[in-house]
Image 1 (cartoon, rainbow, N blue to C red):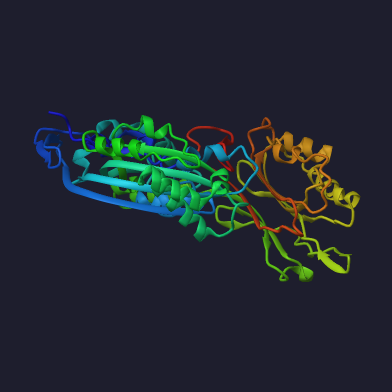
Image 2: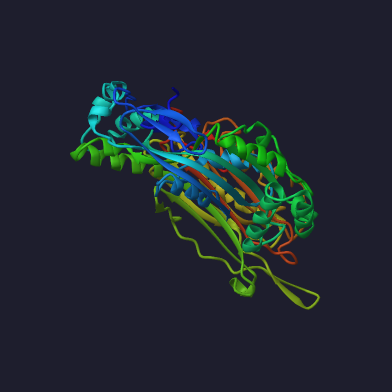
Amino acid sequence: MNTIPGAEILGFGFNIMGEYNESSITFQLFTHKKQDATEYTYPPTGVTYQVPDNTTVLTQNDTSGSTNVFTTRQQFQSYFSAKAGLSGSAGGFSGEFNMAYSQSFNTENSYYYGVSEANYQSWQLLMNSTNSQWLSTSFTEDPAVQNLPSKYTNENKECFFAVFRKFGTHFISKATVGGNLSYFVAIDQSFSSDQTQIQANLALEYKGVFFSTKAEAEAIWNQLGEQWAENRIVKVAAEGGDTSTLEALNPGFGDSENSVFTYWKSAVMENPSIILFQLTPLSELFTGDTASAIAEAIKVYTNSAIVATANADVSFGQGPGGGNYITSSAIIVNGEVVLPDPVPVTPHPRVINYNGRNFVFPIGGFQIAIFDSDSMEVIMSHKYYVDNTSLETEQNVYNEIMNDINEIIQTNYTVVISGFAVDLMNYPTTEFATWLYSCGATLSGWKHYFGFTGVTGVVNYVCICKHGQLPGTAIEQFDYVMDWIYEPKSIDTAAEVLLYSNHGEDHIKKSPSNFGVLS
């Protein structure tokens, strides 16, 4: 008799920095015993399974669906963290985001991130007890586990992190089995700024592709329009049944895949898979001071991060000098805002009169902070505003930056850069670019606009990197507006790096997006 699907992952450790699926499972924490195994027969199929000890089965037979649209990767990751019963993790399920939207990472466009899901739930499996009698000796007798301190400090953090890197910070305490179809869509923000309409369009497309006849799908696609289809990137992911045909799909304008969907759905009951799970923190397996120390260590491990943001937000007539843009930057380390020192005086914006109409330039500049890579103590934190009187005066900002950089004697440092509303023609000087290359940057976004001559383009550029790394290891994000006068749009740019959740790497571990890990 076969063991009931889903039981094989109960009690296993989980890497919450990975994808929302079995690929993020680490090692077994609980022993699967069958001395007092029971049987369970699934009513729709009549198939009987063996249920291991310490496991309860709850029949579900539920169907659910949802459509959500997010503006940031953090919102997307929070959605999947909530599904797993997690909260307050900066890096939770970053791998799921990378899997879903990797095709959009190599473009220069800004996207909304949408997902439509259908879940067909067959049963739930719950662990009855997490008492020590059920724990595996491979976990309890592991030297790193046995040597866990009863108090967390910055000096002994690696004692905890070594356990997390091997076993994960959480374990799977509940699993839902059935089938899941996820339709991930990255929608170019230039298509529309109406997030509500985008969510409605995504739900309609999902219905047309999978739940409609060919005639119904044709009507839906005509309602959506070809421009909608041309401004989004699709990835299909499925669990349960035969997923090969579904996951090979790349629906375009006019496509209906109802027959493929119907075949997959019919196969789910005969071949269900794990589609949802609940996670419990590792600290629940310990008591007293050690449990408290592990809980604190998990919080640090999953939330210690560097965040850099650059914003150029449209606010008609509300910007400085009555302009249409409000600009800002921020650098945050471990939840603390790093302020420039000294705090510079914000300049008045440049205003030009053309054909009797005043045009107010966005105020742009760079905020740069440099930290000791070991202690994360601030070495330098400055903000530099750009004088956009002319292209020649704009270039002076790079000379100012490099004058300060050249005074730094230390070589083991981490760099955080937030460039906001910088003129697209104000390409980094050779000296500034060479320094960035020495810190792992590539400036690939900037390079596309070398020699650009449009006077109304502005760019946000954020970068998190380490001095002495090879080009391509930095976390960079480049966003732009081609015409801030006649086609203004907001650009909110961010990059994030986790400081400790690096699974043993000793340098920035770069994902294909604006997210990575730093030791």
